[in-house]
Image 1 (tube, helix red, strand yellow):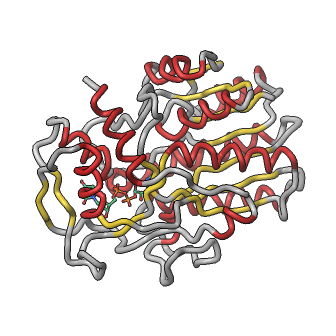
Image 2: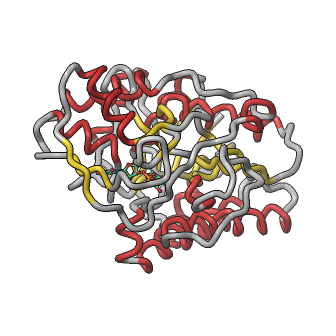
Length: 337
Ligand code: WQD
């Protein structure tokens, strides 16, 4: 079966391509290379020995996107990662985010409706919950007003897909609301490749440990948590990739409760920033140079998943620990030049 992975050369996309190939799927990748590189394709082939079909495609270009689907009308399912995902950047440049995350989804759905199969996995985020009132966070937690245009594009994206599924019964879709994806493939052939200064905690930690960054700033230790720093649910990217395979097979087998389903994908455990630092120092065997600074605007205090639904209905649970994730991230960082 042929599966299209948009943004398949990105961090989560590339790990999902490896998992798909290992499961025997034929993979087609489209990526505009705006936030990834062709070296990732080499990494995928090194791991699986199989070369996915790759097309450089900007999904914002409606004609090019339609032309692509005319050539690939035998796709059984789509896993849609292609989007911009930096919270801070979205505040500075909201229209780029609405164009790149929403227009592309509409063109994708328009073309998908002309294919024999309409199966879509959507890459969403726990950001849609904002600061949840109750923890751990379930899928029935209210979707709050987004704290950033990035988060808003995930909320709007889910609404567009829901409306499409309600108007076109043959459309089936699962939205996976990720918590914090971290780590790298154990082979260290693929991993997270932040361009420029990393926005996210783990790549900033590993780059600091590697001497590429002077010092990690911990954004605030005056939060109402056990040690004053923010708590997040850090999920190994290998576990996250596997969740996409399980969700895809649920779509393909059509044993869904309704034709649009949402799942929180996390470990169900919360760790503070200081706990992550201590765990990293343990797995790397070296002290990390950090200082406490002011809070980062837009940060929520605490977010970690209630995994009951994804465990019971999807039959998936995270297998890797925070230590495994940090160990793999560090191994990956040490391979970078
Ligand atoms: C984690 C914690 C920071 C950097 C965002 C998006 C989410 C997903 C992952 C796309 C926070 C602290 C961070 C640093 C720090 N993105 N931190 N110093 O903000 O939870 O989630 O990225 O899919 O949708 O919302 O992740 O890694 O940026 O921050 O102290 O240099 O680490 O304050 O508490 P976040 P993060």
